[in-house]
Image 1: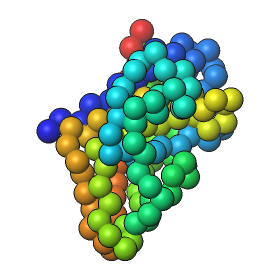
Image 2: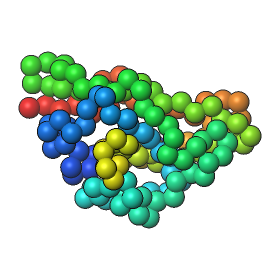
Image 3: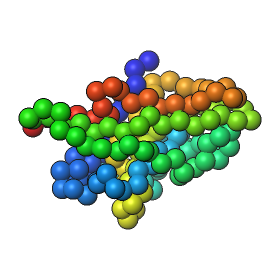
Length: 144
């Protein structure tokens, strides 16, 4: 199955307006069910109809900070949003998720930036790592 990333309606204007800064704290949550609505402007609204994984098996709700967050110029007309891959060490039982959401934890109401649909349930067994590996060409590219 193909992994898809969808951005929320407000994401690009906020990046262009400098509201999403590298110095902010960005987090990612994992979900077993998620109904994406591009118009959602808060984490709470984005999670309507979503089922976040419980705090267990090496996953902690609302806790995973994304490191290495950066927007860089790639060419004269292209910019790239990228970050370090995200890793959870699985303990006790298999960790499984089918969706993820990245949000800005620094700004009031935790606005979501983008939603990731893994295309299937992805699992990692005890003692292994559950990973979100961003594409080598970046999480998001912006072309003017």
